[in-house]
Length: 353
Image (cartoon, rainbow, N blue to C red; front, top):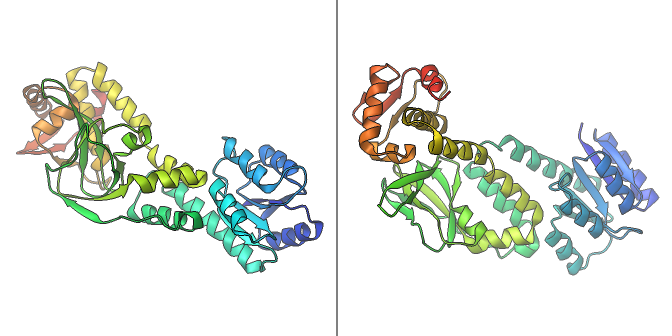
């Protein structure tokens, strides 16, 4: 049962609204002012907040500000109730990160639909935390557009076809977009003074890439190249920054989408720095399997050039080829031209220990 915190200073409205929500099978916690509401939220985080704006002691704007500053309360769906209809009040609430805005008096179905819509969006984000899809992008922008102050947000979501080996962006370029990979495979890499590549990231269908430079306000620190024919969607820098700076709640959602694989990437790079060559090659093969394997029941076969695999592992191509030959002799893998099939995942994993 979802818990809703209702903050409303009018006794009649508070009691009537609470009854409606309880009949709709919600667990309702009520508060008569903003201070009391914040205290109850800290004691037990609600799934959603319905809050009046004009209240004594602490008004609705103050409540939302505290929620945005408290790490334990950030991202809680927040619906404002108010009898005021001035445009400035609407804009202020939305700029602070409110999810919806209902003007009193409201119909019961309006309130219930607003609650259901917000809770459903939260569930979709939780369920999709490990996988981002094109639908997530659409939902992200559609929600952003519901905020009237962002109505002019331009949606440049044209799909670009990128051929194998084609560069999406280069190290040192000024970032004007970041990217969503609709289909295909992308690698990012850095090049040293000798021209040798080291792969810094592997991206599959449903991943974002190129966003770090925009967040840090720097040039691209790596090059992005297609490992196979791919489709990418470029999202303009201006749109992204407009969205993040003006809406904390939407920004929090986007950050969660981006943070899914940071720990895995850090562990991988640590292994590349300190492990033996055999362990690094095993890590590279298992990383590719984890990233690109489609069905758990099938053996994983990858088609990748030796140069690309060497740059993933961080070694010379000749050294990689020798190690792959050893793995083949040990019956850990099979090799057929550019295709490599993992035969014994367990033994390959043991090499990492």
